[in-house]
Image (cartoon, rainbow, N blue to C red):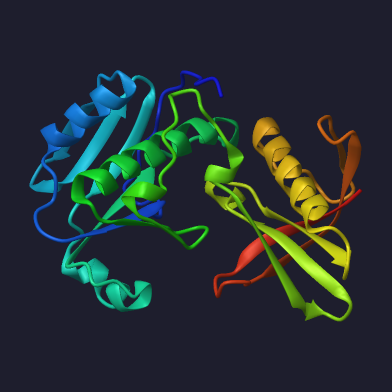
Length: 249
């Protein structure tokens, strides 16, 4: 995906995209910069906040992310138990606040930074939105222009939510400032078809940079199908309330 140049608006108040669990000493700023420059060509610049050497603002060209490593104990109380981690310390990576159309670039950059911290610490990253754990070997090694939706959005299912129907839904579109998508399919239909429908719809949402209103329709060129938004609601499939837009073809 092409990276568009836009003045970033970094914000330490944005919820973390990843938590990084690790043992021992946190990487030094110059370690992360050297790793990034070798992996992606750099240059990566990093500055710490006054009086807070553990708080970093990281920049590469137009992209910016915010890292706190390690997080203070006041922010991690109960978190290790919640994540079932044995790691001694936890860091956090937050993306830059950008308009929805530009969020893919910001998410890509934050993910690269999180990958680097996972490799340098030999720790574990936790994707807050999808609730997935990523060990060093789990990260996909992609170049600066490599945007693959499966890296950021997962498709899940629940066959207990409604009788005779399977609830298919996305987890990850909220990273990009959009509502998640869902679809209800009769029991027995192809899993592949449901996953492809949600995956291609998710990619189209990210491409246009917004969640269409109820009643709106859009075309999925790869599948040759037209999708319509038929409902809006909130649900909590993993214990966290999310907004969903139901699609039908």
